[in-house]
Length: 481
Image (cartoon, rainbow, N blue to C red; front, top):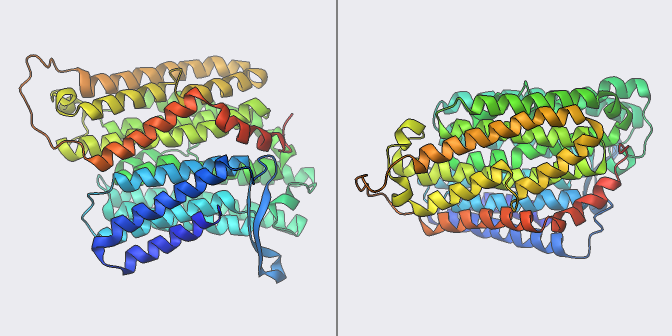
């Protein structure tokens, strides 16, 4: 049934476009809720062997070229489908009061969600590429129409970077097909490509995916796109879209070209560590709350790339867990900054937020931001800690020097997170501050935030739930040392 997450999302998108405007948000809510139920049933069910990329749908598409509508699932894709469903439902809840062209808004949102499900389930390389490129179109319109703060520039920059990465991916796919005469990911994972081909095709393919994962120095689209996007757009970018690139790098580039990966993994680790430290240092100098969270996303995605570069089961498993964890935490942070705070204060500037008694006026937002900050810093008990400590242990086996340097980035992450938390909610002396009436946090916002807070806490306390699915799938990868 997990394939129905794709079909229901696309069907929901068509319904909100053609049915009366008053029904659009209810249809979007019902669609994402059913997607979440299906994802949970598949994740906790026993019908899927997490160690094998098991076919669930296979229909001939273009037989002359060997293309099939081929979907498959294993523990990694199960995990990423689940975080997609959680983020999508929360994004709809935080968009409950959207009035501008409501039908179109939820149409584009559900197209992003459906395309993302397709990427995580595709087992045909060309089908994977179709879903991967498809996501670019709705996310452009979601930002360009409904965003703010240089929205046209942010949408175009994100799109151009995405198309640049997609062009590299397409070149890699052509090289794969010309050599193996197959597009089946399971078959390609067993094919022995010439070492000369892997030496140049792997970095092309990996870099194409890594652009969307926010690799330094091709990361600048991410903070700009996050700030320009509406709240739901930022949540989807952080929670889902950046994970498409990391997943493609793992499932396609690393698993198809294992020897090429081993040749280049030291450079991947170098760029990952630079990204962690550089983005955290830049975030420390920002005054716009969404820019801070945007650079924080780049820094946290650096941990994903570092985990992938370790080439050992522990580090790669931690990278997949970090994809899940950052998806939830990043979505929560953007939801608080973009909807709970900006909609009521009309500012994201820390200097202006610091003079408002927000802790008294918006106590739920203060609690949610405190929990999200703790999770983002990697405090034990939250998913961020479980993911990052696993990555660092795995990295210690492969790149001990990188772990020491990464420690600087972790200190900077704590510094800019605590600075943002203090300036936003704890700078004002409530005893002497004048009352500032504000619209209370709505019920949909509380439900959406509670879902994300519960998820990061549950995974932090019981990471075995995810590792039991992720671990066997990672162990089946060809590139492990």
